[in-house]
Length: 152
Image: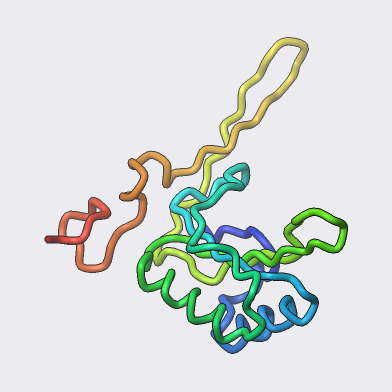
């Protein structure tokens, strides 16, 4: 299953040149960028781990791409996204958000249905990834046991 969150998520994965172009567009509009990563891409999980600090002082997309690549190298099997913040309304709001990396295997979600009183039907989204503990939800290349941890 392919997770669809943020802009461009229905398209094929963006190349580094395409990522640089989108970051350049955001920076040209005065939107600073930040990089985040997670192993739990649940739609309600809006607070991902921040990679460094938001880059308020960068004006060159190459600097943002360098940080993206550093985050990718440190977390090769996690989701990585770029957020661009728009402060034009006097508050920091995300004006653009898109994924720049996905794990090699995306287990997806299950929709649980529960019937209640008065014919109410409630649905809950369950991420298959969360069946494993944080930090071991996706396989790590070179992991002979498939437990999400690299051999020592």
